[in-house]
Image 1 (cartoon, rainbow, N blue to C red):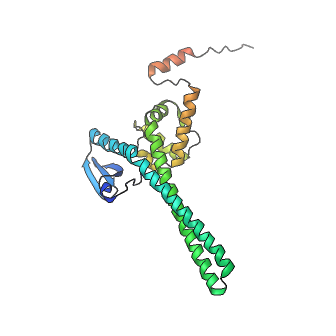
Image 2: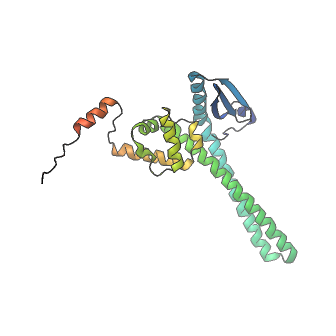
Image 3: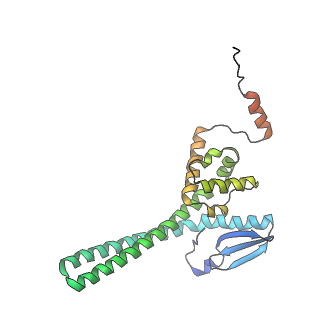
Length: 221
């Protein structure tokens, strides 16, 4: 996830992501430092729980801040546009060229800022949505592959590799999945809930499905 902190002190303990290497958990923090602990299931769970808590407690304030920045950038862009219009009416020659140059640079910088803010808001929405639906998403992934409908092929391959390793998708692993794909998975999850079909999970349930299959009679010519 990206850095949701609003002050430097919080950056020291805010976890962006982690990786497991040589029986160690390498935790990447928002202040650009790493924190290394021995790999145990309990330690990994503690890291994941901390990341979930970050989403639950810090994402809303961070998103609010980004929306305020969007409003500020919008007002700036409008102000620059008005200034250009006035310049076109008043200025001539070199002065007009300078004014147009300043306007162009300002607008480019504003667009870049908008794009950065948009990416941050998408990250917040992705992690918040997944955090609220994590249990249902993993339950659906284990039984119903329709949840991956219309997601990127690379995402399908990545998620499938996780499942083939007998692992679950988690708040750290979704860092490698585009926001659009996570939102599509949540959308597919909601559709699955409405359709409410049964998917066998255990071997016993699969055997029951086999027994319940209709008998197909072959016509003898």
